[in-house]
Image 1 (cartoon, rainbow, N blue to C red):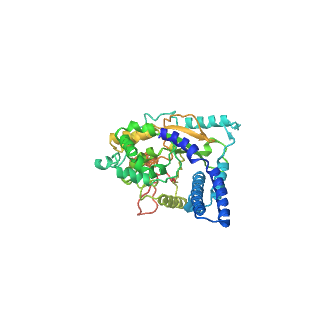
Image 2: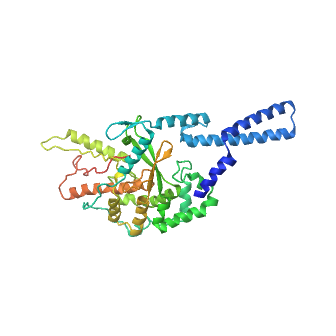
Length: 413
């Protein structure tokens, strides 16, 4: 694929050419042919005009496709096929996402491009570096017993049909990873690259350490506010290679069927048939009951806000959680290889910063991350259940004769 990238760069310049220049040439040629055929039409000139018009249609479609990729706009939602529309969307998006200056940790404004790039890299190096490893902390693990045959399916090696189904189910024009290849490339060229692509996926399942070769990740910074003023106002979205995403998606597809059996009903995010609205309704009813409660003993509501929750997940804690859930060792090795063998480069002002290796965190953009995060946060529910079982905490009783509730899951979206 690296060799192909070099060949494609040369082909794009020498064969494909500049589509804007080619479009102007075709417009001029078509205008001349139309004028000629109006004065003195002939069979050959009419055929030439037809061929020129078809070539122009191809060039216009290529131009539209180019701007559609740059604009990141969904056609079905926006319902517009005008290239000018995509052009305006792209310019507006670039202007909105352009970062000209930010505040550093001391509150000083930095506007030098090189210093801004270094500041961005340093921020995420610190964010994804485990400065306080999780050790010596004993937390309860109350995962329900699940049959080993079901657990062993998590790391089951997919067959060719599974790989094709996962690949073809991807959005073809989503932002590519470090290798620069969209999913559309593999979808359209499956007859050519399918054998090698499938062999790579199967090899990674057999030898998890192989995942490192395709696990380079780009961090795209998405502003969380209209006018970001510091690095904390950006959400790092991971752009993974298509090969890695197929592997992670195959594991996630097997894992999601077990999530309802491993996760308490109080957990509502990223679990099939669980809905976040259920917990919102329960929370509203609980607050309402608390506000109407009378008596000498009061009640307290504790709101927990986990800052950068995904990015701060401890890898050792994740591994211990998988072991507590009784995952087979082969599955744990495969999942931990997906998490720990990555490297990061921050996308900044059209370029990439130097690479760095994280020591903690889950990637927003990896198909596995939602399930793994849910399993980790389930340990909080186990802590609360343990306190309730030991009699240290009392669950909330909304009304006499109604089941007791304790709300332990985070209301995250």
